[in-house]
Amino acid sequence: MRLILAIDDENSGLYFRRLMLEHAGYKVLSATGVDEALRVFVSNPIDLVVTDHLLGRQVGTEMAREMKALKPSVPIILLSGTTSVPEPLQYADAFLNKNEGPDQLLQKIKLLLSDHNAKDSPSQPSKHDSGYQLHSLLAAIVESSDDAIFSKNLNGHILTWNKAAERMYGYSADESSGRTYPSSCRQTDQTKCWKS
Image (tube, rainbow, N blue to C red; front, side, top):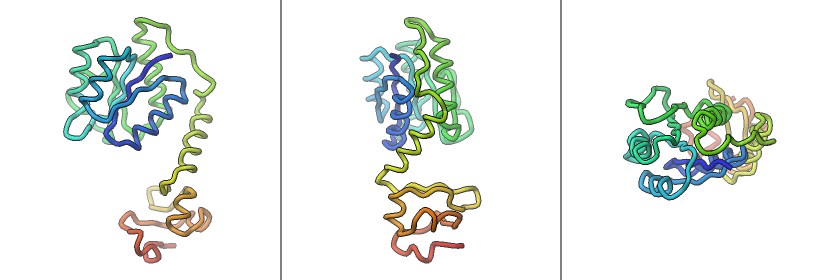
C-alpha cells in the first residue's frame, strides 16, 4: 500500500483530505507544519507528498526544495486556494488549485505514482475509487458533521444545508433552499440575514 504524507496547517482541510485518500486505498501520514512534515518525511518511506502551499508563515515550495534534496524521487503535489502557480515551482511535481476537487487530486496522484514507480508497482485501483462512491463518502461526512455546513451558488442562493445548520440556524433544509444568506451575517441576529 502506497504511503502519502498530507500537509496542511488547517486541521479541517487535512482531516477531509486524509479521509478521501484513505478511502481511495492509500495509507496516510499527516503533518500541520513544515518542521513536523520534514521529520515525518525523513523517518518514513513516503511515496508521495500532498501539501498546501501556505503553511503559516512558511511556503510549500521551500519545503519541497528541502524534501527533494533528501529524497529526489518522491513526487510532491502543491495545493493552493489561488489559481496562480507559485514561483518557483521547480521542486514540486504538480500544482493543483484546491477548487479542482478530489477527483482531479486522485488522478494526479495515480499519474505521479505510476511515473515514479521506483520500488513497487502502483497500487491497484480499489473498489472505492469510483467518483460516485467518493462523492457519497464526502456527502456523508458533511451530513454527519457537528459543524454547520451549507453551500451556495454564485448568486448566494443556498443549495445544500446539513443537519448541524438546521440546529444552529433554526431552519430546515427545505426552508433554507433557494434563500440568500449573506456571508456578513452573524449568529446573534439571524432573522435580519435572510432574504427571499
